Image 1 (cartoon, one colour):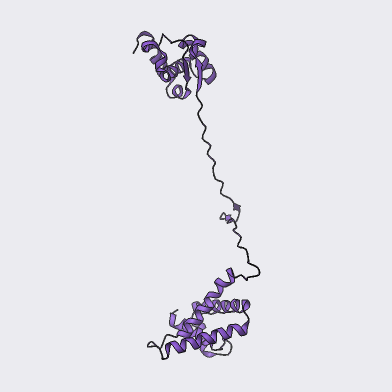
Image 2 (cartoon, helix red, strand yellow):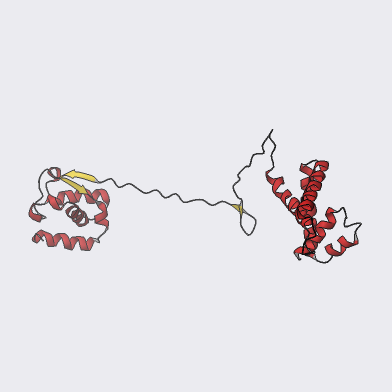
Length: 223
């Protein structure tokens, strides 16, 4: 539907002509489904606007707008298919939809309530999006004094029982986490009164077989 046809229809309606009484209006509206929809939307907009304002005041405002445009233009537009009055009328009617949604008076403002959107499945069942709450565990290291265990084997035995890992995995983890706790890097010589860090993540990072081979190798050499 061309804009010029829309403007012609609006100008007819603004001049007081109706679908029931005007053949011109009927010809435009009956020409297409799009024209019929535009006609109905325009009428609804005008009705909403009139519902919010006194009818006499609304007509007076439109008369003032028309007079103002006549004074400013003072001549027929170069393009005769375009009507400034019709365009102004369409703008007034179109604004009715916005006004009807958000209008308020000085005495009482209409609150705008934000509502959560309702989500539906294809079968019409409502559902809601549940955000997954990810809680990161804060790692708190455990300690044991070397004087309480006397040897790496004893320290590994305690850690293995508590963490449900093999003794060689525990010994490997203690040795890796506490390189300064052993005299000259010798796995057999645990320094007394040393706070050992028990980091089970190092134990779980290796297989039991790897940990066993690594511990046994270091038992026989300080490397």
